[in-house]
Image (cartoon, rainbow, N blue to C red; front, side, top):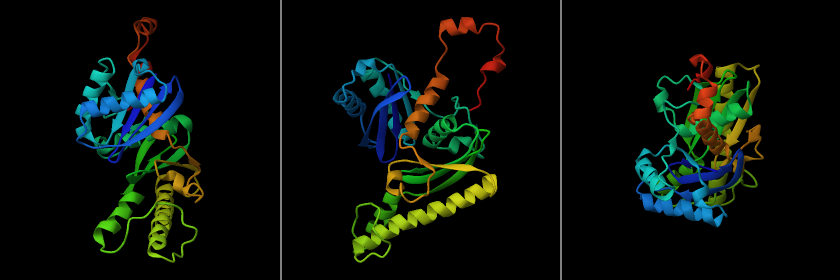
Length: 280
């Protein structure tokens, strides 16, 4: 079994794969000051609560945009998972993508993971991935698996917290789809602004990315993912919603980077190195 972890600014999102089947998923809030024991004890307990023996975890794959947590995470894997060294999705590993960023090192590993999974699920298609998490990110990938770029905007929860922290009377609200745009209370007004404002931004950015990257006539599949994507499942801003896309991408990237066994090495003896090359 393989444990995959997406460590974000707000949450640790994880799941366990048995071969290619995602058995279950879990979330917990993330803190940059978490110790290795806190992480290790939590991971073993959540596995047990879902009827999985932690000692059955053969590999651990990780992507993170919180580098200060990596030291604690590595130590947690070594101490609580039989001295395992986790696979970290980062610059230099195989992904099957051609990153066209001016500086590829700037690209978040969660965005790479999403792209790895998307091109596997929808090969030879032009794609726009919208990940609605702490930030809302837009990733544009063409049919040749080139990561062209994208956009980043504040996530819906960050927008709500900005209102609360920078005004004297506006309250925190539940993030949901309002019945109508015409709010008849302060709470309804905030919910309307957050929801329909996000829809407007998503549609505008998606339209511009589609035009600039592919032209108005090209077919493009828009994929929604992330914790808040389900709030917009009836807004017709996505062609398909895949909540666990990042976990699938971590799992696929780990498979791409597994060292070949001795048996595989012998079988490949005499083959040219070009046959084994994979672009980042």
